[in-house]
Image (cartoon, rainbow, N blue to C red; front, side, top):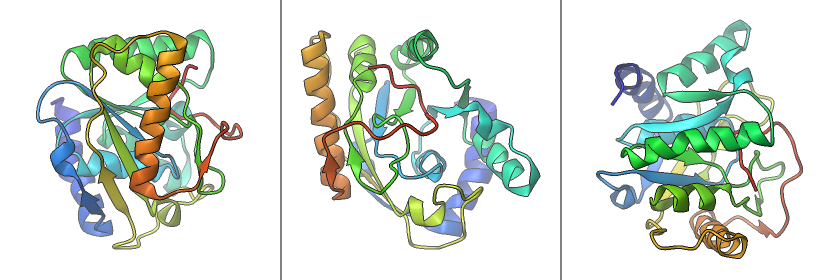
Length: 228
């Protein structure tokens, strides 16, 4: 585990756990060793913060560059959390830039690291769960690692869209982990990747109970790049 990430786990992660007291279910589904992808719903910027805090292993996750360049107290707070929890800064762009970001994650996964991806590609504008983009399936099949579904609840109440930093509200957040979905031997054609993505989204819905919307979420500011 990288030194800065270890320090972040002890400081930032511990502060989040003690201050907000998130409820965690299904930690036994997180692989003890080897690479894996966390695929979760996306309600808030705080999703990354609390996922990084509750998972005992190192996670590499993407975050838009703006999160690292905020000004004022709120901006500095968010930037400090991103650095402390090991976020990977991504310049906002689509096309080849998004694919390059995914390509860079494959060696990490094959080397035994864990990566977090949000298949919806952006935060839900209304709390519903939207159709997933196939980037998560493509990445998992290419790296040969399982996908661990994640359900986040309550993060939108702690840090709604537009709120610069999490409000201190205890016992509001729940993080649920589902059983890993194995991808070894799965085909990487478009139809197979679509089917795997839909399977992942169905598992996420089971964990969250969100209403499912069979279309892509309306574009906002993209978070982790999600190549279709």
